Length: 550
Image (cartoon, rainbow, N blue to C red; front, side):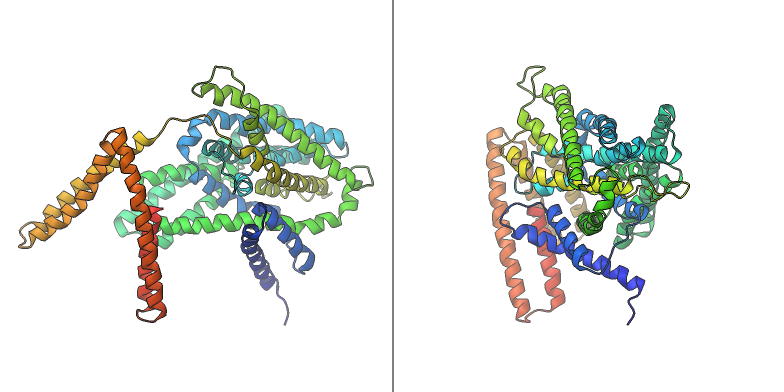
């Protein structure tokens, strides 16, 4: 039986997905904390060594498949209030640090490797400038990152992905044309950024308004709603690229707009739950596949080591390791200095109880610096380097740039996995005002609205009926629960604390009861006392209740 190309492609996809699943299990079974991305890279390396299937990565296809959905989801889910709270810090890291990195590392690489053209060196610096919060989260899985720090890292990554890849586009254009105009580059940057943001936001608003109109008049179909959410980032990316704007920024803007659009045009509860599950799976699979692909490409990258090192003018491959170490040192130094300046100016200066101009703690600066891990976007960006110039000659230094970017990804992952947990242990961010009063106010307002709605519906249903007392009793039982919530949230501090303690106890009791119900339903289903369809429905109801109380 011949092994067709289509069957080979399907087999490759299944192998990559299997490697992602196995990597999660292995990372949990290891006695020491090893970040999942490193396990995925190792598994990919094994697949590349022993497997006869090879993945030929098309750079444009790679960017289209992986970046739009991941960036869209990051923009959709990032807490907007937390982002806006430290927006100045995020912009300083995501834009100022990226530009500084492109210029500084670009000149450093060109100085170390004169054979690499300056434009290609800038392209390499652009792809190593974005950070990857997914890798940071995996590294610090056993050492919780302070929420405010994680929000800053997420916001930085969301924006520096776009700024880094826009700089990459400018550098590639300079390498292909052989000329560079600062004015032209600035105008190109503004067009790519502005048009990309406009396309992403406009498309999302148009689509969400359109589907909301259809849903109001003809009903909502959960599958269609989920599929529409999956198509939006790809549509935004493709339209932006078609008008020579930034598809990356379009995907980010689409995600940010989606979060605001969804607030005013809410989908059905079942649609939101199923959609979240689908997107969680896509995020897990896409991030994992990217790191597995990186490992799968390593054998081929290493097999051309002699040719790659020859591009530097040396013979020993250890020079390549030295270059990676030098780039890492440059990235660390630039990030440490910039983070220190940024935190001193925009973050810790506003912290209560500190004197103006106080220096930020070195552990906080060091943790933010080591959290600058490179990952999926760096790999995706470096693989988009063209294979050939306009005249058909090979793109200068492409293999060397891919090797150095890969080395930076691996080195940053290993270094952060060893150092970051030590720095994060016991680390606290500046104190923030409590949001308990805001939460209490919102819960009271929601409970009061619920009571008014129950009274209105209760009167409408019981009007003129002989069994009106049944409706009154049912409504009273429900309203008593809401009134209890209002009293507990509107009382003084001491009473409120007691009420919250009571809520925690009630939550634990309810969870224990739900677990007992689930175990009993599973038991009687195994005994065939109830049918599988009924058992599935009952277990789903318990799952929804458990999610509510967790």
